[in-house]
Length: 261
Image 1 (cartoon, rainbow, N blue to C red):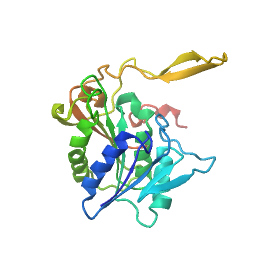
Image 2 (cartoon, helix red, strand yellow; image 1 turned 180 degrees about the vertical axis):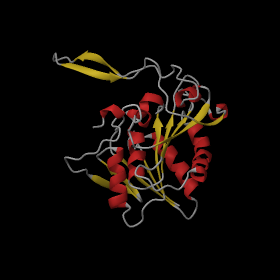
Image 3 (cartoon, one colour; image 1 turned 90 degrees about the vertical axis):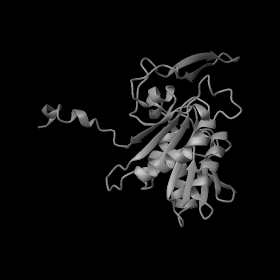
Image 4 (cartoon, one colour; image 1 turned 120 degrees about the vertical axis):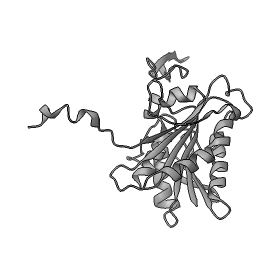
């Protein structure tokens, strides 16, 4: 198996090293693992692409590239440049430092990389490690994902249907904020919403008197709706959420027929 890995935390991120080990095991002795990841952190860029200027790419090792762009840029560079003669069988994005459950999904560059891979026609899975009091101070806070990701990915690949649709499936996987031994199992879960949790700003004044603002996230330990991704994560389960890039509110189509003329 030939596997492409990317992320949004950057080429030097510990989570990418975790993912490389996971991918190497999945690929097997006759497989290949290719890395095309952002040269610098790209957290929060979602599915953006650098459309108005070129993206520099540097080969920094065997089958290893850093690109000055977003995760979606990295996927495009991989499949159309670095791997154009040997396309991947699977694209893995992560392992993200922090969860991409619930509303975080909408902002995540990790998700953006997997989404672009799916749009390009490749099986794709995003992987993220929830942080919390039970794992953030571990020697390896990625312990749960490092130990369980291989099995979860194999389950997804074995279960995923063959499709011929405009917007193919990709998968969002979040590992709970517990040590590896604390993982209770795997749950198929919808995308949730943490009540009252939104991004905001924190103002700062520079020594020169200029005004700045840091973007801040909300409390990641707030319970979400039962059975949703963030809810099962906080209960100790790995969440698997099937996704598509189609943003249509399909449940509203039959209720808004009065708009048609």
